[in-house]
Image (cartoon, rainbow, N blue to C red; front, side):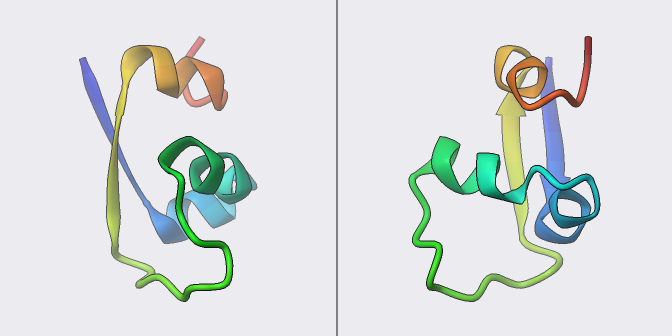
Length: 51
């Protein structure tokens, strides 16, 4: 299973910093609110999206 989350959703769920680390993103760079990230089931569990 793959799970998609946008930057805006990650910010709302307070997991944006985890997404930045997980994907090796530059924290100083600005990202579009609608930018999508695809997580594996394991990654989604790691950031607390599913249990």
